[in-house]
Amino acid sequence: MDATSKGRNAHRRYGRGKRLVHPGVGDVRQLKRFSSNYCWKLLRLLLEVFSDQLSKGVYTELRDVFRRQNAAEYYALDAQLGLQCMAHWVDPMQGNPAVIHMLVSAMRKSDQIELAPSRERRLVCLTQVRAVDDAIPTLRSEWLTDPVYVCARRWLEQVLGPTPTNEAVSYSSRHGPGSTASIPYDHRSTYFKYVDWPYRTTPLARGQLASCITTDARWVSALEDSLRRRFEVPMWSILDRTAFSEVTIDGGHPYNVVTTVPKDGRKDRPIAKEQTGNIYLQLGVGAILRQRLRCFGIDLDRQAMVNRRIALESSRTKEYFTIDLSNASDTVGYDLVKALLPPDWFRLLDSLRSPWGVLPSGEAFLYRKFSSMGNGFTFELESLLFLAICKGIQRVYGDRRDKFFTFGDDIIGPDYLYTHCCAYLRYSGFQVNSEKSFSGKARVRESCGVDALDGSDIRPVFIKGTPKSVMDGIGTRNRIRAWCYRQLGDYPAKLDGFLIGDTFYDMPPVGPDSDVEFNGWLQDGPRAAGTHYASLVGTVRQLPAREWLLRRLMHSLRSCSGEGGNFLVTDEAKRVKLVDRVVFEPFSWLSDY
Image (cartoon, rainbow, N blue to C red; front, side):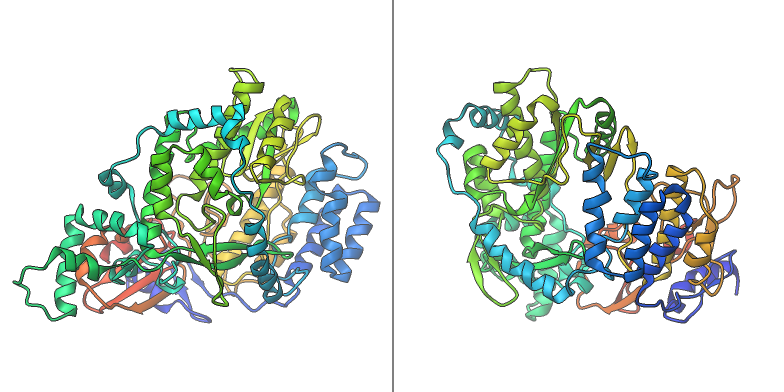
């Protein structure tokens, strides 16, 4: 068998304890089993390796905590030595601030260092969902009369312009990469979201989804053929348009499903899974909001890089503040959106949201918030609203030359308006996170994944737990290596003995450094042009296919950048292949699918 054939068949042999062969490289096997205290062992090793970067007192304090393996003591270290403490005073005698920040924060999100079991954190989070929602303020008269809100409303009218047509929404709409209220995670492929009809929506979104379907001739044709087969209708018969819409769209689900995802070892984060039809339309409207914002200088596709750069500069110049909000997605009030948005835009967004939420217990409640994390336009909407409030503050209290930047709940603005922004955001129902908000003479700024101290990024590597796959092990090693070179200029080889030597049976493929790809291969500096290297193929699962008439809608799934993972569809086997991750150079062996 030649090397190319080996590459094509590699994913079929990938499994626990089985070999995975790449063209031109050696055999790679699955990870060995790790001990339950893997994260604590790694912390102690990092402390030993970086001991020359720490004072004796700090080293002793960290060593004692790591030996006792006490989660509460570990989280307390961040309050004693972490970013908030560095904001106003950095003791050079304590050691390298980047190393200290790394050691006290790296395991904050680990599933091994927990203050409470995951089940307990989930229950606490679910019980707080109603409390947070009930605390959202209802309509306040100042939202209609205060000059700041009046200016914010006028700015929104200028930015948003006329509401988009049905054709514009249809053109921008798409399925997302995750699960929905009716589609489980294992079936998150776009294929299953097209095949699983009747499509579920809220009552008000039903008409909009019907319009999207009728504007796509491929979709209509595929649904007609599928409907004829399912109900044994002759292929030559003419279908009634009204009946066709009623059968293919189920608009009787005015709710989303509330669940949680881990945030760190202390608490979970609530999210809501929307109905399949709603998330399809919400992502379309969210894309239109991005386009409108882009015309006024806020490009959400690139804004994170802009915010990082400004945060780095401001930690040195003190020109801008950075504000972070707590539970921002869960505190965007319905009445606030209604008071600020133009009426036509409010009606459009209101028709696509879920007015009710259903908890795992089956309890249903009416939302006071407008949308939640999981809604397809929540990120764009909150970016728009926060910027509008900041623009209103600029018009009333600031200068026309002032600049504000928002990326979700990461807000940046002129430092002298920090107090005004905090006051109006709180009055609008939002909670300013004092632990991650910085202004004035503070030496720290934090925004969009940058922890800036005096112009340097000291962001640590967050290790979320024991590696569960080859790619997880490679990613952990590569990220720590990149951090070491960025902060210290060198990577201690001793770390590889733990991160690689005890991880793999055979040496995995080696390749060049990358700023965006960490889980593909062992990074080992620049390579000469033309040097061959390969990466690991993720887990491949095969799921039974129920319907093939809708495959004409799935042409994008054959590329290696398909949404929700890579889904390779074959007619002969009547199955869908779900590839969690594929990074391979060249991609020639994938073209056969």
